[in-house]
Each structure stands twice: as structure tokens, then as C-alpha cells.
Length: 406
Image 1 (spheres, rainbow, N blue to C red):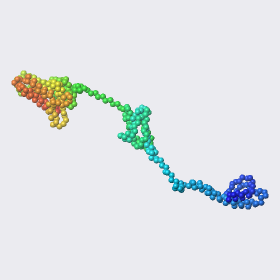
Image 2 (image 1 turned 30 degrees about the horizontal axis):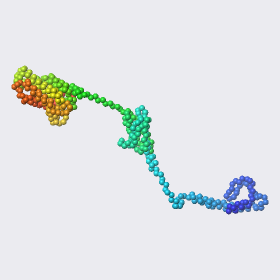
Image 3 (image 1 turned 180 degrees about the vertical axis):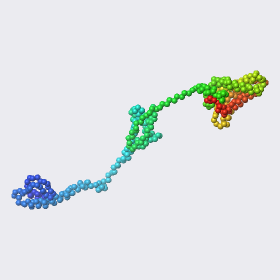
Image 4 (image 1 turned 30 degrees about the vertical axis):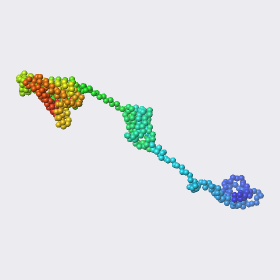
């Protein structure tokens, strides 16, 4: 069809006026120029124009068929993949998992700086990252500038503990968000407060000397000496010098001398030890015998034997427990005493001192009143009984009316 059209076009010898064409339409040529038949051509213009139109229109209409014919392979190749034959079974390509990437995106970092009170970084500080007070997540040391950094930290509440030599331990808390780079506010450490405790302790002798000064001032109603009682349960033991000094003070105290004179008067009034007779001479002998009994008992049982046997001649006030327990305690102290080693032990000093004083009394008691060993044990028994009564008074009565107690 295309060849036929071209032959017709060439059979007509057309000449244009060499003017430019405006455009070519699919239904024919339309231009601003004019054409004319060459000289000698007998075919009229209208006939040629009609023939051209009759063949050009079918040619133009055949163009879509041409395009469909030659473009169909390309269209076939561009069809969607779902229309491809089922024979192409390609292996499935695994899809990369995003779980690891998501996990890496959930953790974060924690960093900060440790400084002293002057603002300088503290190097070598131990920084512990903790989830709670018992679980340590990570532990690092601060660098020269005091910087520290923790990586791969899971989100949640955090506790940071800083320990540095010479500084007080610092604890700070915070919360790390998902994928957050958490910056801890600058941590300022304070110096450790140095507390120097100086304990000045006196020696046992010095403590005993201070207690002895108070002991010398103890008096019932502020008058009667009450030197042989301690109201301190842990009192320091007396030295041998103090034991002798206390015996001397007790036997020479004016109140003690006056008490001995009263005892001598009672003995004379009852005509005890009749061998001494009556009158001034008899009273003087009775006074001497009573003072000898009193002094020998104090010096032997309160100074000599306690120094040798390392025992304390004092009565130690109990003050606690039931009345019955306190009463039994007071009675038992006649035969039990505290040693210089602060342990309770048999009161050899008091018992032997009473027996010794009773034996010595046989030297100055009138011959008619001497009864040998019987008198010795009698005087010792009287002394022990007197001690027991005095101990009961010390436990229940005298502590209330004794002045200048320890």
C-alpha cells in the first residue's frame, strides 16, 4: 500500500513556489505556498488532488496496525510477573532480620565527669553502674580528666556510685531512655571528714587514786566514816599503799576514836572483863582493849592480808535485783570478796583477820577472862556477825544517807 501511494505521488510532477510549508496534516498537505503544474502537463490540478487524498487516507489509517505488529513483542516482555509461566521456580531469597538492628538501637550510653570541689577532674575514681544496690552492671575508672563512659546499657533506672580515695562516696541516680545517650550531671566529690578520736585513759593506779579521794570523803550523814564501801561496780583495785593509808585513816579518825570510847564505857557499865576493875583505871584498860581489837582487825584484815593475798577489803554495793537477792548478797560478802583481778573469791583476808585479832586479844584480856581458843573464835564470830549487819545496812540504808558518793 505504501508503494502504490509513492508511485502516484511521483507520477504527478508538482512544483512548489519554494515557499515554506506551514505544516502537514494527516488528511493532506496544507501550506501557505502555492503549487502549479509544470508546463506541458495536461492533468488538471483537481484530479491529482483527489487521487492523492484517496490513497493517503488508507495509508495513514494503517499506521496503528503497523505499530501493534512490531511493538507486540516489547509489550509481551513488559507484562506483569504474575502472568509469567509457572515453570520458573526460583529459590526464595532470605529476608534479613531486623531484630538484631532493633536490639542494637534499644541500648544506650551513659557518660559523665567526676570533679573535686575545685572543679578539677578526679582521675582513677571507681565508677560503678548499678541497676540496684546489689547488682553491678559495669564498672570503670575515670580518666585523667575525670571522664567516664558506659556503652551498651539497656534502658531503665540507673544508680551510679563513685568511690575515690580521700573523698566521700557519692551516689547519683537517673533513668536511661531507649537508645539514649545519657549525660550524667557533673559529679562533685567532697573530701572525707577526718575524725581523729583521741582517748586519754589513765592507768589503773591513777584511776584508783581518783576513786580513793572520793572514798576518803564518804561519811554517813556527813559525820561517821564510811570508807570501806564502793558504789562503783567496776572500781579500780586499791594499791597496797592505799590499803594501808585507808586503815590508818579509819583508825585515827576522830569519830572512830569517839566510837571506841563509847564501847569502852558500855563494857565498864556492864562490868565486862571484870579483871580491869572500875574507875578511871578500869575504863582506860577497857578503852585500850577495845581500841586494840578495832585497830588490829582493821590493820590485819584490811591492809596486811589484802596486800599479801591481792584482795579488796571494800564492800561493793549491788543496788539491783530483788530484796531477797540483795540481802543474801550482803550476808555472803562476809566470806566472799573481790580480788584485785576483779574476780570474786573467798574472803580469806576478813576471816583470817578476825581470827588473828581474836588471838591477839588473849595478850591483853585479864587472865580470869581468858578462855583460850574459845575466846578467839568468840571474838572472830562477833566480828563476822558485825560485818554481816553492817553489809546489810550498806545495801539497804546507808547508801541513802552517805554523802560524797562515787
